[in-house]
Length: 250
Length: 340
Image (tube, rainbow over all chains, first blue to last red; front, side):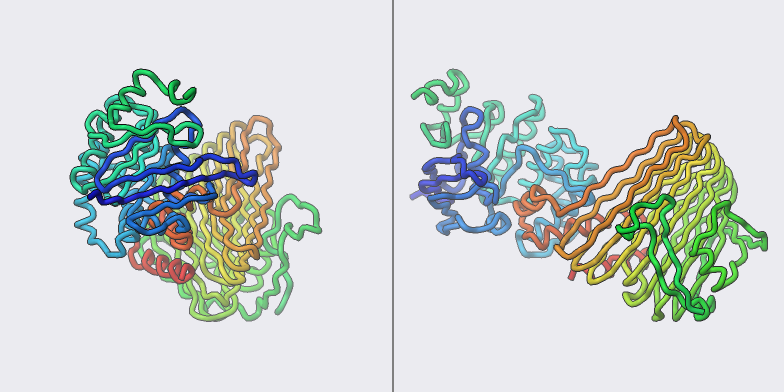
C-alpha cells in the first residue's frame, strides 16, 4: 500500500479582488519518495499550484482540500506548512539584504527543526552541500541572493533544499534560465535530496534536461487550470517531442 | 540659565506650517557640567594643543548653547586608531576638537552612553588634514529618559576621506546634527546612519554636506525602523557651492514603518550654485514587502520572526564593523531588548 504524502482534492483557486479563476478542480495524489512532473503551456497555472500548496496568501482557495500526511492543511499559513516539511523552490528567488546565507540557513534550520544546531555541525553540513552543487564557498557569507546571478540564485534554492531536507519539495522552474552545465549541477543536487533523504518531489518544468538523472513516477499536464492528462515519465518525452497541442485542443 | 534654542535648523527653509525647519528645545545651560562627562580615550597617538580653531560657518543655536555651557577642550591630534567612550552622568555637555594628522589613516569608535541625567550634549569638530582618512563609528545607547544633542562639524581638506557610521538606539529625544565642509579638492565624505526607535522616542536628524572644492564627493544615507508611536524627522541637504565643479552628492534613506502610529518626516534638499555637478536623492518608506515576508515564511519564519530577522539584518552591517567585542555585545543586547 502506498504511503500518500500529499493529496490535493478538487482544488480551485482564484486571484485578486475580481476572483479570477486559476486552478479548477485539481486532483493530485503523491506518494512518499515519488517524483511528479507538472508540465503545461505558459499561463496554465503551474506556479499557482506550487504557491497554493505552499500557502501563498496571493491565491484564495475557493473549494477543495490540501491534505499533507493525512492532515488538512488548506487553512494553514506558509510558515506552518514549512514547519510540517514542505519546501518551495522559487522561480524568482527573493533577495534578503543584510543577512548572510550562512546565518539565514542556520536560523531557518533551527526554526523548522525547533532545535539548536552546533556551529561546527552546521558548517560541515553547509560545506558538503555547497561542494555537491559546485557552489563557491564565498556565497555562504554573502547576503541571501543579493547580487547573485540567475544561476547562482537557483543553486542557492537547491542549497536550501539540501540543508533543510524537507519531506516534500516543490521546484518551480528551477531549471529556467540555466545553461547546460548549471542544469546538470542543479539536477545533481535534486538527485542527492531524493536519494539521501528519501525526498518527494513535485517538479514544475519545461525542460527535459533536468529530468535526465531522475526517475520520474508520474507526469501531469496542466492546461487552463485543469489537469488534462496524467501518465508515466514517458509522457514527458512525448510532450518534448510533440508539444501541448493535443491537450490544448483536446 | 534656561533658554529656548532653535536646533537642527535647515539651511533652506520650507513652509513654516510643516514645522520641519528646526526644533525649539528648552535647555538649562547653567546646569550643564563638563565634569559630569567621563571621557576615556585609548590609543590614538594623541598630542594636544591650545590652538583655536574656527570653522567658517554662521553661528547656530547649538554653538550658542555650548558657548554658554562649557569651554572647548584642548585640540587633540590623532595619528593612530582610537577608542573613545563618552559617559554622560547628570546634566552634561562637552565640546571637543579633533584633528586627524595629514596622510594618516585613523579609525575612531565613539560610544555615547549614560548613567542618569536629563540632558547629554556633545559638540565635536573634526578637522581632516590633507590626505588623511578617518573612519568614525559612533554608537549612541543613552538612557531612554535623556535628551541628546549631538552637533558634529567637520572640515575635509584636500584628498581627505571621512566615513561616518552611526547607530542610534537610546535617548527619548535626540537631535543629530552634522555639517561637513568638503573644502579641499577630491575630498570625500560617506555617512551611513541606522536607528531603531520604539515607544515615544523621537529622532531629529539634520545632515548637511557643503561641496566647496571641485571634484568632491558625498554620499549620505540614513536607514531605520520605527515601532509603536516613535517619530523621526530627516533633513538632508546637499549644498553645491559655486566653484565645486565636478562634485557629486547623493542622499538616501530607507525607513521601515511597523505601526500605524509612527510619524516619519523627510526633508531632502539639493542646493545648486554650480552647474557642473551631480546631485541625487532617493527614499524608500513603508512596510517590509509582502514578497520578502512570504519568502521567509516558506523557510519557516512566522511574520513576527521574519520581521525581527529583517530588523536584525539591517543592523548587521553596521554592528559587524565594530571591532570591540564588548561594545558589539552591548549593542546587540540593546537591539534584542527593543525586539523583545
